[in-house]
Image 1 (cartoon, rainbow, N blue to C red):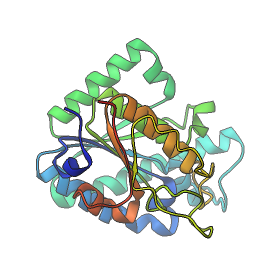
Image 2 (cartoon, rainbow, N blue to C red; image 1 turned 90 degrees about the horizontal axis):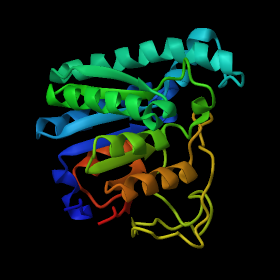
Image 3 (cartoon, rainbow, N blue to C red; image 1 turned 90 degrees about the vertical axis):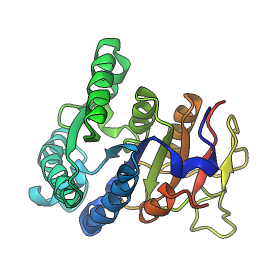
Length: 259
């Protein structure tokens, strides 16, 4: 039985993906509210996995960078520094609830290679069985083309498929999917996308607004379709609304899973 929109608050295995712009720079203080929402779901017995972008954006100030670097080597250097800081910030916040995080760094290749995929699945299942909260990020320090992998949206969908999650929540700085970019006149929120709906006539943007990530509505829709095809219900909404999202409130855009 696949998850329905009305049963979101009862989901037992949840993947939450947050973008760079939501938890880095001037929004670094949003980690605590995000963790509050994850901890609430954890406390009701749900198994929670966080897929977090932000290593490069978090590392940039330590390398005296004012903008996301263009060259791969500097991106890798920023990711190396930033991943360490990012995981510390998450664990420091989770400590308030007595929750221990486990860091899992993956590339697209890890989930496309059968042996690596099985190893990742085994590790994730064991972490969840031990009530550890896995924090997944792309392994940007060694990634090549994957470093521009849609701001981890696709990775989150693949993780949801890997662990057979009931629910995937894709968070960004926009509260839902709209019929056209939300800053344009006439944009209307799309509350639900039936499985297989091609969204004909919908104008979908391809880039994010904040300039530190690489994802936009296009990557959210693509990731949502991947996850929905594997049977995972998907909710797209804003990071500021994560508590309401996990509580099952009627916000964001719901992508119905395949039956």
